[in-house]
Amino acid sequence: MRERLVRSLFMAIAALVLLCGTACTRGAGGAAAELRELKACRLPGVEREARCGEVEVPENPDRPEGRQLRIAFTVVPATAAHKSNDAVLVLAGGPGQSAIASARQIWPLFDELSARRDIVFVDQRGTGRSNGLNCQGGDRRPTLGESADSQRERDRLARCRDRLTERADLAQYATWIAVRDFDRVRERLGYERINLWGGSYGTRAALEYARQFPTRVRTLVLDGVAPADMVLPVSFAVDADAAFTKLADACRTDAACARQTPDLLASIDALLAREGANARVTVTDPYFGLPTTLSLDRAGLAPLLRAPLYAPSLAAVLPYAVEQARAGDLSALMGLATALSEVVEGEEFGEGMHYSVICAEDMTRLDSQGREAAMRTRSRDAFISHYEQVCAQWPKRPAPNAFFTIPKVDAPVLLLSGGFDPATPPRHADRVARALPRATHVVAPNLGHLVSPQACASALVRRFIREGDASGLDASCLQRIPAPWFYTPPRPKDAAP
Image (cartoon, rainbow, N blue to C red; front, side):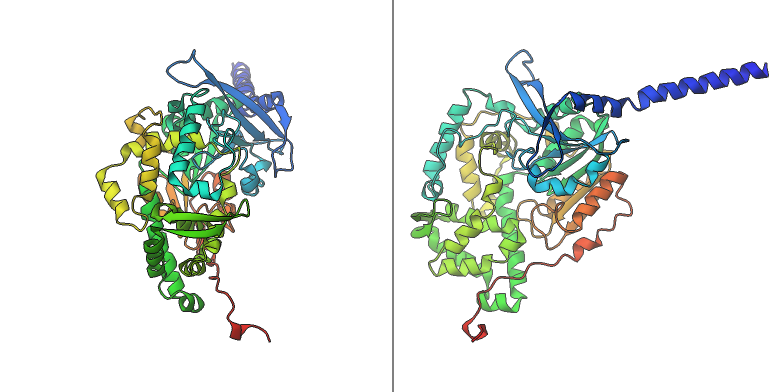
């Protein structure tokens, strides 16, 4: 009897081990098998061989038999023999950026993590290789003078819209539809759960994925939080004003900057008042290198002033550039404004997808309160007016009401914000963090837009994803990152003889 009991227990344990050997490791083995079936490829900026593939999805989820899209993804496989089955899925910003194309810039953040986890870059529908809705393919690159002409710019976008509608239903490229494609990729690759890293607009996509597929999320990293209930053109104006104020305060406490620009806000106001009256100025086109005469109104000048705020190293030159502009030379301001333009320019940026998202998700929620808030800022309705006119004729479909709510995510969430960020400052992440039961929000006071790739923040992100827990995470190093020195030209008396 005793022998029979021991034999029965042994057989039960053996069966359990066999079951675990097939079921418990099925995810990792399945993912490895799927990767072997993909085509070998290379990612710019990544030394290791990657694997590239596609999944086919219906463009319109309500018409599965209709036009199909090929959603492109690239996987950098883990190098360890025994890897984790919770890959990292990278969601790009914009909206409109290609995750695959942006790998070059953000790969250093994931290099160390890729020892034990696959890193997956998915081009969201309408971007990059996933039926990219690009506007530059048909039109030549506009000159600076053409871009600054608001009517010509709207005409260019109207031509782009008409051209794109020949091969795409632009109403089907909103976030709440696109995240279903991400889950198809996860399913295709055989991962049970994934770690989501979203930057800027990518945080909106990550939150929506967590809302629709909560059991598939192991961790969330939200860097530069842009929730769905945030009306971007209003926030552009309100948050830029707050960033101007912070920059002016910092300039006031710096002796050299205060000497050069005693009151940055007053200088910006004076520049806007003068150029806002359609003053004609001559500047050098930073791309074509040709002198160009522009008629700048407030709507044209506001984006030029806001753009350098994204990176503190550029914002540190802004007081000087503003004073130069007030003296009639806009070359420094134009150079700063275009310094980051390559990030969103070129064939990989889905300009059509950008408007499909904002027209359907942000502009449909613009109300009188938001408009009044924008009108109280220096930019006034510069950003609202542009999107309002473009979106008036842009195809869109209403998003479900739940899309605009912050999901109750059970997974641990790490939120990162830059204190000088003019686009997604800490106030947005604070609001999201309050609604998430396992959220940790850390702020880098002297950094701008996107924190993860910078200084010690990379190590914090990697540790959070590895451990799946933010408790005990020491983010004090972010407080010690210094602000860049303000640029001031050397004075004659300071120059060497």
